[in-house]
Length: 270
Image (cartoon, rainbow, N blue to C red; front, side):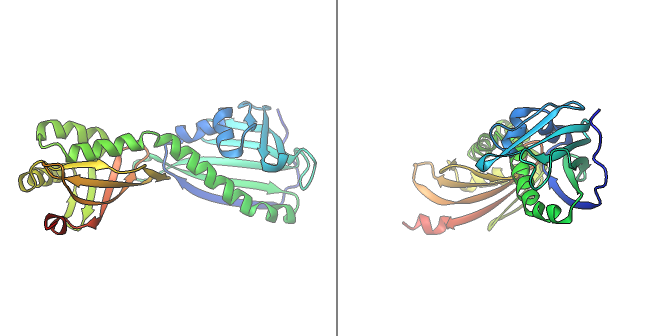
């Protein structure tokens, strides 16, 4: 068993919320490829007590350590120091990461980081580093959870283009939360039932409506932006805009806000 370093009176604490289940987040502490996705190429972790931890930063800076404790999916503790011995010798500081369920349904994760040092100056040098590194971590986890974001958004737009309510219902149920919210300048919708009624009316007043994505989806930690174009039955463009999607930790759509860049009434006069 790797011993805990002694005499570490100085602490650095940081907490953040990650939109992913705790079991998903913990996989980034047990798999070297995932570990490297937020630390850097060549980083690795041997996920067992006494296992070696390697972190390779840009510029050939290498931090090393050993796992003191690992308890999935709750906690990881490892020693931390630099291969050169500066500013911290190998084994001379201690990092503990705790994960707890968060959110109303427990689908999100609250991460607590504690880094213990013998020296206050070394602690202060790592404040911004941990702020940056944990931001990379949250994005790495979210990118894995939301790997199908573009397909989910395309399925949303396809459902809006579908005038067949019987076919549209199961399609939306697969990709959207039952309490999904939709807001734009013409709509204030809460829940799938309300959305179905709204889409029935949309196709009644705008027969032949077709929605399609224009350009790539941009995503960051559960927020995705997608440009869209709406066309009429004759294929003419009638409107375009941007949708802001909030995606939950299961990759389903939680809410959508539509921002119009071209008003359909203006377009119809062209």
